[in-house]
Length: 271
Image (cartoon, rainbow, N blue to C red; front, side):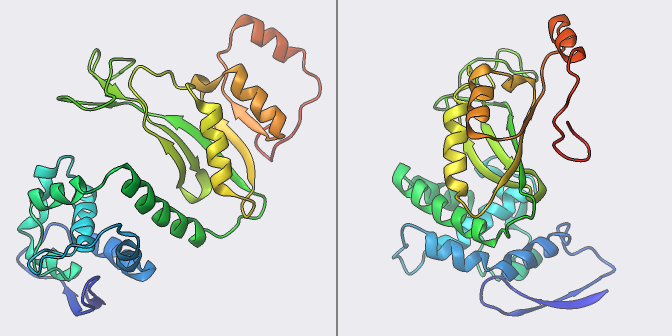
């Protein structure tokens, strides 16, 4: 196998070929990095970055941020684990980085972000991604979901709640809205670990639909039994949105379902 690609930074040509001796364990990342280059990731991040580093010796913020993203993709879960790729010169060449930032450099970059900077930075990148999303004939399926992240040490908002993996461990309980066909995260809230799945979901969904605007249409809203809540169902009915929300199959519900004689078809699979 032999090929050639352009580095994300600097635009230099990088030759790709197999070798007898392993050069890097992250060769499969080439496809992901080529995708980032094709969509103009570096240019978008640079334009959205809310500040610029003035020191002549500083690694540009866009390069540090990209190095952080790559570190997460290869498995880093803490800043200190960015060292997973710091010594990989072949990967640095594909990225086009002359210097790979240390974990302290990455940490110091994020220390510059206050709440306003986070909002401006994320909003611009999110709108860029939404512009890349072509409207779908028939509309999108919007999936509501929540997950639990256990936390260690002292982290803001980490409280004890339902945690199936680490019982009693403080956690966060994020709420997500995902456009299923595009695997696109439309909206997200980071909540404390003591929240139920449906906590604040109506206001959350209002924000998500507002972000989506009129260019895209929601075909159906889907959620599991944790969201089987009268406030949510009433909101969906008021907005005229079709929905599939899992309900706990109690005896009363089974009796009611058995009495339904006419079902409203949502598509070829669901009614």
